[in-house]
Amino acid sequence: MENEQLYDVLIVGGGPCGLAAGIEAQKAGLSHLILEMGSLTESIRQYPRRMRFFSTAENIEIGGLPFPISGVKAGRDEALQYYRKVAAYYKLNFKLFQKVDTVTKEGDVFTVTTAMGDSFLARKVIMATGYFTRPRWLGIPGEEQDHVSHYYDEPFKYSFTNVVIIGASNSAVEAALELYRHDVNITVVHRGEDFRSTVKYWLVPDVKNRVKEGKIKTMFDSVVTAIGTDTVTVNNLKTGDETQLPADFVLVLTGYIPDADLLRRCGIELDPDTQVPVYNKETFETTVPGLYVCGTVMAGIHTEKVFIENGREHAQAIIDHIVGREIHQVKELIQRI
Image (cartoon, rainbow, N blue to C red; front, side, top):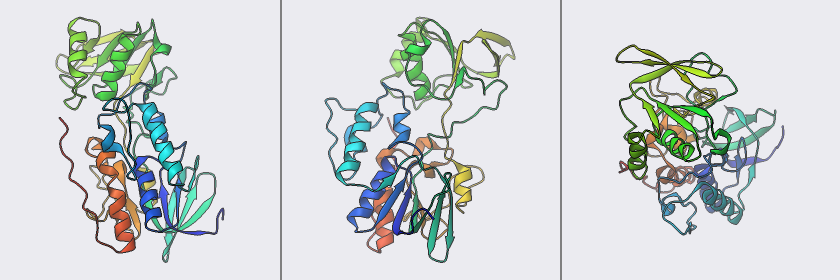
């Protein structure tokens, strides 16, 4: 046993929602431990380096601490600095680079075991693992090759090369625009007839105009059926025509999903179709008493429905339930425009 201490609350995941849970636990006088599989706010660290949040800065604040920035929407680096300072301010207790493997319960005590073989004990466990660590794989031949990536970070690696982007949501559009401006030959392939309706509104006129000018090429109503060493095979869903595109690199930016296997290993029931955990909508407790879900991990395949701005509120409701006080009512998601 790594640690014989029995924590009141153990939180799996050190992203904004996990940190919010730690803050609420500390405010309530509960001992806590946050286990994070990577660095603090690992998911945000993996975001594209010039990415800006959809939410305004005040909507991703946690712990009641202001998030001052010169503009309206924070960028990746600003968010990393902010959440680090929040964690330091509240003196949160966390262990980094500890990937949780299982959560089991015996009597009233949970044992949380990591992939390193360490174990920790807790009275309550909050799963706040998000979804950014699990890309949506397409399952097509060649997807596992080294020049294929499910993440995009910065453009300089790709200058003066041919890049095929699979997908048409925010991540795909942001990557396409940045790459085009760094001398990359871009083709976007998407099974839909246009870019996703959820694309950040300020990106839409930019990408539409670049497509109109021919600076970003698109193949809509199409799917990639195979990835070669320097080409991809694209099939048009309407005509059946097959096309070979040059591709020095392929970015599969088709989104991410929670780690359903981990949730099941922890005893959490999932909807077979949506992969959404079965939980109490008021308290966020799962069918395992004392085991809660918090933040974007509860979205299942519908990751567009839970963000930091509403996921951060889950923490207060969960801690309210744990300590037996009136439960904070989490705001319903408002459609983004």
